[in-house]
Image 1: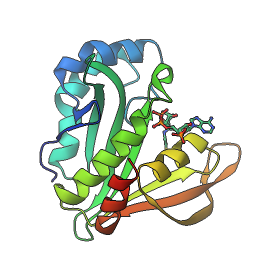
Image 2 (image 1 turned 180 degrees about the vertical axis):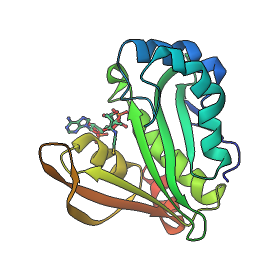
Image 3 (image 1 turned 90 degrees about the horizontal axis):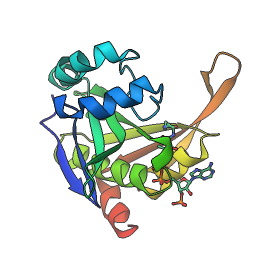
Length: 186
Ligand SMILES: CC(C)(COP(=O)(O)OP(=O)(O)OC[C@H]1O[C@@H](n2cnc3c(N)ncnc32)[C@H](O)[C@@H]1OP(=O)(O)O)[C@@H](O)C(=O)NCCC(=O)NCCS
């Protein structure tokens, strides 16, 4: 499993979700604004406390990945989430994903978090490869991957189905030799 995560980088604090986040998470769930919360986060405010106290930690303890909150250090405000999932410990691979609150986008938060967590996974988390998939039409997410220092490897054509049509996915990854270039591009 991954060690506990606490990353302080570029005005952001990135750490596991926990009970102190209850008020901010509950407000988002109540508002139906869940794009900034991790996949599998509760849809009902009644489930928030249990999710924060148990489910998020279980993910790290069972080795699948981590659910992390992105907090703006200066204000203490929750601005989004970033996570690792589908971790393969034998191969040393994991997959990163992220989301930022609608009113906090365009400030570099996702780029900073994707860069910092990719580095953490390779340096402290024991991973050899952090992969990232972004729908080609999700221009902001593709841009985040590029600016955070992930290398583009190709396109998975018609790889996801949204219920109405298929979409292409851009494939990116970060490995140890990319870290220096990612740092230089900051
Ligand atoms: C994708 C997402 C996380 C980006 O978060 P963010 O904090 O706004 O990202 P950043 O500010 O770090 O960078 C956004 C980059 O995308 C660009 N961008 C944002 N919206 C864009 C758009 N509609 N078209 C083109 N570029 C766009 C920004 O200009 C910036 O690039 P730049 O630095 O070259 O100017 C956010 O839009 C989001 O949460 N979307 C919903 C969830 C999601 O799609 N997650 C990714 C799944 S793979």
